[in-house]
Amino acid sequence: MSRWHRPLMLFAALMAAASPVLLVLVFVDPRMLDGLPIWIKPLKFTISLALYSFTWAWLLSLRHRAGRVSWWMGTTLAAAGLGEVVLIALQAARGRHSHFNEATPLDGAIWIAMGATIGVLMLANLVAAIFVIVERQADRVSTWTVRIGLVVSTLGVASGALMATGVPGQTWAEDFAGAHSVGVADGGPGLPLVGWSTVGGDLRVPHFVGMHALQLLPLFALLLVALSARWAVLRQEGVRLRLVFAAGLFYAGLFAAVLWQALRGQSIVHPDAATLAVLGVLVVATLGVAVTAPRARRAVTP
Image (tube, rainbow, N blue to C red; front, side):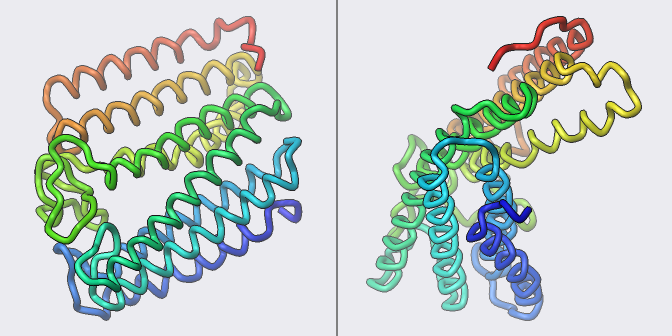
């Protein structure tokens, strides 16, 4: 880890250290906002950004040519993430909404600053992702795991912009410049902890699912390596590569499905027949790719 991106590692450590403090505040501060403890939102962001920045610190240690430029992109990710968390925590301390809030001049100024940090983070994420994606890594499995994870993750990060740009079916509350939900107003019944709407679509679901492809797909590839000690078939690079493609197919399809579901104003916990049919086709297609993996004779050239 000595070669990993130091600013991102420091940011990840800071977010990991802040999370227990915020967890304590969840229980000791009785204030609520939209039916959830007021410190839940900063807590969710510190945990998510700790994982996100740790993963990027690792990604930027991988082989790629634009070393100096990508170092600055990583530093920008850390700085933008820190700025966003500070502003979210400030609004929580004030007992105010952070995202989209323009109710007062101060709230509006904080939201503009948050919008700037989010935009900078998205741009830095895109540029850094391109630098890593175009490179070949140690082997084909790691190369394609990183590529698929970065593409899906970047789309997941970008999907967050839909909350502020507006989509059909959204209802923006007075003095708000955006919303999480589609088909219903923000602040209604939601899932514990995350607050995702249980009565309408919620754009936070695809944002979350897509963003964390960056962690789950590499973990899947590592799992295959660990299992290869027991199952000889997994020692073949072509087999592991095909299974990574199957996992990538499933994850990308899942992200697209939950985004489609949210845009139709449908809650993640109440899928209709069309959503279930799409998920069924996705599962069958993924299994079809996976079960043929042991027969793979040629790996895809990156």
